[in-house]
Length: 303
Ligand SMILES: [Fe+2]
Image 1 (cartoon, rainbow, N blue to C red):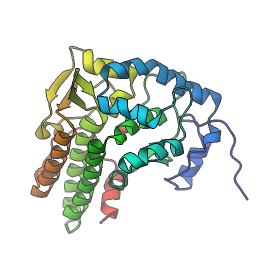
Image 2 (image 1 turned 90 degrees about the vertical axis):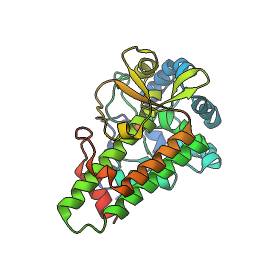
Image 3 (image 1 turned 30 degrees about the vertical axis):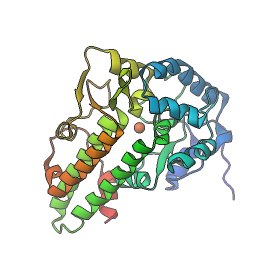
């Protein structure tokens, strides 16, 4: 019998369509666009209207061009199929709707195939400022415009290669405890790298330091804070620092790293993979992020 889904919207934390898919073990879903309520579209409108002037001021030029290239709507939640029609011819990337958290290896492997796992729910209108989990505004307004830029898209694909290298490097370790220990360290290093670049990266722009990290580009408050606050430590990126720096998620980032351009970022991912092969990622500094069992398992199962 077909399942009846009540039209209560696709609000973060309250979206039966998504929760039911998750319970059925379905990671990849459809956007079910008709389930969005007027309140859901209103949340998008408010988020977009508020942050747009800050993008003009603090976002990198590739992002601003991406917004135009995708024709990102300001007054309603975009259909991913419309976004993909414009995105795919540019870099081959596509936004792929998911029901929730995508375990580490599967996430990076999606990037390698130029698919970006995309949340379809949107935050409630009374929680505009802080949401620990991603929503469609973070994923589509924060990440996806960056995927229109070839040099940045290539970085994400190269990162997916690194996940495969991690699997390859650890697959033949017969001592289970040692395999777990090494993988945990490698995943931690990769997560930190991703966090301080793709999520919270800064870069040199024609107008001074600008943001390319999606955690910044989707946050009205933090985007301004990251560029303007005298309390933020902003340093030229160094791989040795990225992989050992504790990454905390529950407050504005106190330390941010600046790349010259995306070719520079690409060269750092190359170096990350080289260091992985040399064993340098087997013992990174302790502390956050914790590596979830599902992340570890995803790398082990890929072997
Ligand atoms: Fe993100």
